Image (cartoon, rainbow, N blue to C red; front, side):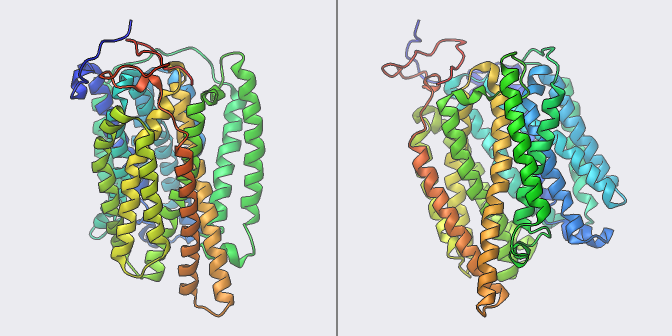
Length: 510
């Protein structure tokens, strides 16, 4: 029987029991800690290089190794969350992250520090898919926007705070203090979580397919490394790409290996799906809504990550700003996105994705468009970044919620794994594309008699212009995003032709 019309509950406490609220809050706090750590090292590489006597190409592996590990582990999280219970997956993620943080804090040399970062990344990769899948299992469809809004706070504020906190700490303490600061918080989250978190899913006895695991490593790892190598020119400088006349050979080889391995991985998963034991269930793409939203994510993440990579280069090399100044300039946008996220979540529960996505993505176009003029006044850069961030606030929650809600319950874990993987690969691809364009335009400017700084400025402008075009494409794709019938507010009657929302009803693929 259809539910009778009734006012929607005003607070999450009205729709979730105490146990479920406790689980979500613990996962939110833990996710905030691990994502904060992901960006806290961004401005610490120079002091690490000086202290450990490292070349830039060597030190860069502290971030590259973290990214590669994330790219390899995230595709396996769908299997992990089906094979093990919520408590077991949480314990695995946080204990691994805590152990990696301890290794980094005590590292006397580069190799132990790199190992610690890889261990940290292994735990980080599991936490966000675990949080998203748990929310989808616990929260009623008509209230998911509100909770996903809280997740968006974690996604936006934690990365924004990372460089700022890092710059402040490094102004009076050595780089190991960054890990010493995170360690007790991670330990507290782990111990408290082990005491309070409860299982919200049943573990299965399905064994992992060894060949699929190998193909994941040979596919996503080399793919992301190849894309990163193209964007860095193999030396951390985009200009090296142009100077060498193209992408480094190692990056191209890794791209080929990654693409071929992914082709074999997809073929293997299609075969395992017939036996109901895939490592990553690709039947999620049988949902039209999921496919459209993932396509939108690919274009959006590519455009956004390219901006994120290039903007600090322009600010530091052309405008001559310090790393702390750059971190402070990026902070208002991240905070604005986080503050707006809960409101966006509540609006999504009322109006659905399209009325939020179209104006949000339009604001992203305006923000990147302002920055594409690469003004020499820093306040204009801040303005463009804030407008872009406010637009993204209207995008993240609707996209994640709509994508996941379009799937049946048994595929939530695989859906969250695909979303996380797409973010990693699309981000690396977008950065590679925009940095290579910047480098080529910069090289052409220098060959024409311009200075290196003029080249970077013109190259950045060209890359941001392309990013603006990509953002315009996302506005068009957003017009095809539909709301799942299960997400309709309880206060409203179902639309004609839509299935009525029933208590305990699972979302169906659309």
